[in-house]
Length: 329
View 1 (tube, rainbow, N blue to C red):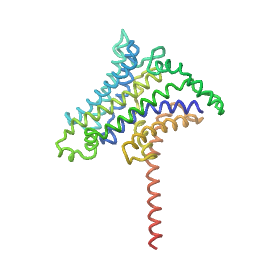
View 2 (cartoon, rainbow, N blue to C red):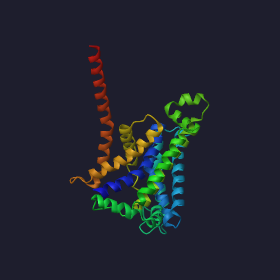
View 3 (cartoon, one colour):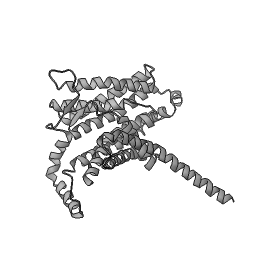
View 4 (tube, rainbow, N blue to C red):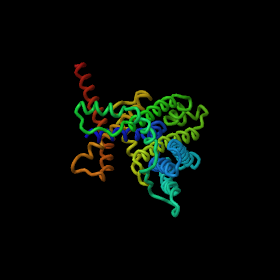
């Protein structure tokens, strides 16, 4: 059980980066961007391809981020310059990215143009390089001995992955908090709230939407690149339903931790992604559920996250009214 939860937390922290990207479009820009399902794979495919071709994992990850940014900008251009519906522009870009991702992974094959997946079993990744440094510190042995002393029989092989993804995600959260309070960040937030108002201040809303979508999909691609290196493979279908996972993380986090400030909201999104993975890990341990039920479990989690807060708020409002009526009487 402990190892399952430990792995869920590791994955949750990585997926939290993707959830922050989804938060930027759906909550900040108020833009239903379905590019996420494609740009997640773009990040994974780009990073996996470059790693397999012998490039440094950090360089491969940075290029993956740029690829995601370009994909997001293209969605923004389709919407702002092409005057295409936001939902449709995301769908069109997602469809286009499916073929593009096949082409990217096909760069590792000699006889074919496209390739559906890339294994990275014997390749150096960000995590393996950090683990080589981490193993010399002796922290793994100390932490595992402590856990065994408490009573845990099964302990993680290494804590290096958890530490490195935690550091990366915290840095991204701090940068996001800072950016959303800058002049450009405030303009993007204002664009999502009221386009007409921000236009009255001579702001170019088209540019702000393109930039916001680019940054969002850059984060999504970054998460995809890390997942590919974490799971040691990239697959063209690994992005299916990613937008739902991102929304589930945002909704769960907001429902539990609230959205009073930007700092609190970004923390809520990260925590929501971790909680979502933990719920999923626990659900899959139920005997009659299988890994093929993941999408169904995700849908149920999202439905509950959307419905439960409404019942809770109605119950609170009912109690408030009853209290007021009692005071007046």
